[in-house]
Image 1 (spheres, rainbow, N blue to C red):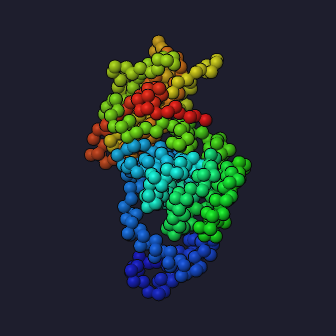
Image 2: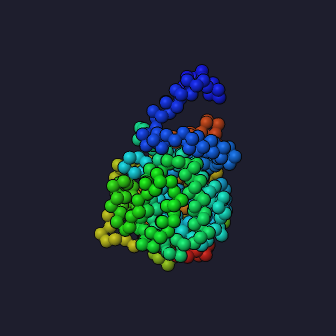
Image 3: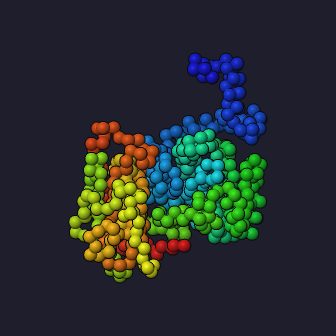
Length: 465
């Protein structure tokens, strides 16, 4: 339509031209679906009224130009850094309760055509607790937040990378661990039915394909009921698979698919790996208090961008002991080009035992920080003797606190944790204005062994695969 057209009062010819222009940009599949004009009109009007009444456009959706927290775990995008859900200021208790009840969900990289992939460990849902944890409206509100994050944040990035419009996602529902009792829990099924009905009305055609994997024989009974709630077009896009994940690899490259689904990805840089799950217990579910009073507070800035923390490591039984005065300034390899010989850790003639160390940290502002961790044997004064235990990675602790898990050699030595302010070409967050760049960034952090962390917050042992 021309820029001079009154969009609130177009002429019939202008309206027809706009519809044709829109249809030209839609796929044949969508045009066929929208050939029923009465049905399309009902859906569009209902969608618009709902968005107004629910104030959907005002939702706190994480985007590059704000500091809102991510609604669920994210891996492999640049619009937001890799993250798990943690108890930040912008994450309310209702969302945390849902996270602890649901089996674990994650937007995990892309399929072969550049679509975002969402993986849900539905088999690990604590089904009987979902109706106790959330109301139907609360569950739908959370689901809407997920869909808006997809629409506003991930799809634009995927479109830019693909150099064409990407407007659909691939969903993988993993039913490993599901029971007959869970599949027949009526209150939870009623909540699912209502959510599916809303999804089909409010976010039609957002799904390219859904794969239901590790489906046990008892799922067939539940599926007969669930499919009666779905539009035939939605049903045609759902594939029920058993334990054979070959079709997943046709859709998603192995390096983008978690190893527990037949791929090669492990996301070992993040607690919980590819898809963290509280019910599965594969990462520490820390309470809000764990991030409220972190042990060390320092200031970094765009003019003084680095901070280092050094602690001693001892064999298992003693664990890392923080030094009385954390080392300020440059103490590591940050900034050294990745082709430098010092980036390569020396090869040990025999595999070294390791111990797990956790780093909690947050910032009050900024566009993210880059973290790197190295270890040096006791008595060494040269970085050439060091081992890079955690290569440079960008995080956004201004959105919500970050929890990192490290594997340090189980030997006497020094663990060096380096932070620095993200450079202008790292991540997609806008660079601050000159006056904003003068304001210091408050960095708060704590470093603990696994035993120290779990004991301090009365947590069960971590179940690593």
